[in-house]
Length: 125
Image (cartoon, rainbow, N blue to C red; front, side, top):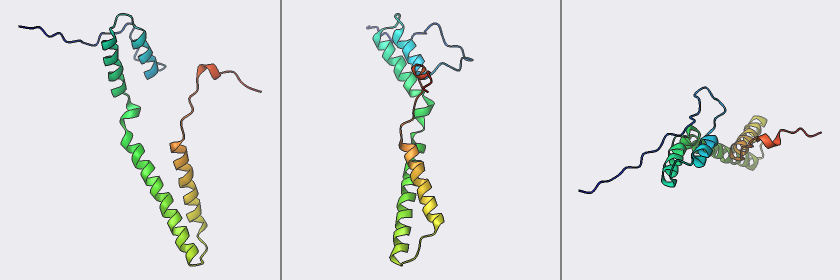
């Protein structure tokens, strides 16, 4: 009979306190990578579990739907303005305002988020 050994994720000490609000996902990954007691295979398993349990990355469909809806609203606004221009009618300012707002919302959604680091704490004149 051959024995199969299962590798179980080890516990990492010191564990972050549940009341510690400053522990981020990156901090936990650094703790896993710097732990000398774990094997590379165990580190890989722990990092994979941390990635799976990231609440920010779990709701990808809401992001996709919002991009599609905003993109559709932009196309619809362009289409309506073009049709009104074809009839020599002035498009309503409200339609242009909605289109402009949607373009700004889509640009804000697609632009990368700026992250503040502790290195950038110096104030500039």
